[in-house]
Length: 208
Image 1 (cartoon, rainbow, N blue to C red):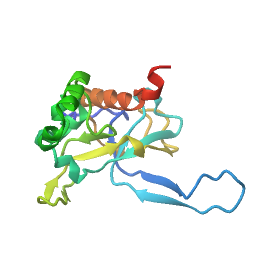
Image 2 (tube, rainbow, N blue to C red; image 1 turned 180 degrees about the vertical axis):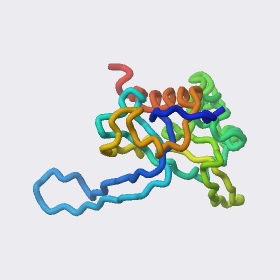
Image 3 (tube, one colour; image 1 turned 120 degrees about the vertical axis):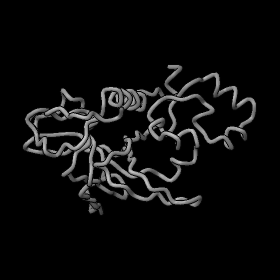
Image 4 (tube, rainbow, N blue to C red; image 1 turned 30 degrees about the vertical axis):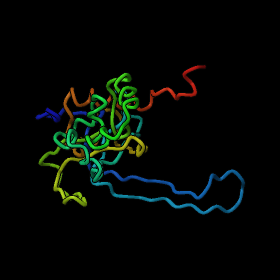
């Protein structure tokens, strides 16, 4: 079960919300010197957003969100993942993380290296949300044939902050904006994957 059948009267990590905007500053280069610099700010009325704050950190008139976005066409390239797109959210065996034709092209040494590393995540910065009647269907255009789906995903790189006077605490908030609450298991998977995403140790730091 990916979603709870009955939602709490509170905002929680992983909740799907509606009614919030997203903003993205766009610059040509860092504004280090005091001179005229061109910049733009993209403002979008995001149809759905996902709460990215831990439940206990929601409040003080601010909240961290990320847009719920369409799947990429490449999400369907791997048969193991296309059978159940939420497998992207969980660790998998090395041979499951790539399409079979790609795995077969690896050298024996590369295969062995990956097998020794063991289970891991594919699409590190993505987390897939299962389809639901509240989420409208859309078409993913692929060369092999278009696919209609109501599965969505989030990209950890798209997080942003919103100041909102009505968000005082998880329970004292505009709860009419909440449309879906993920299950305990799905929230745990989201927490595990985003923790791994931010907790990876760069190779150059391993030997320090």
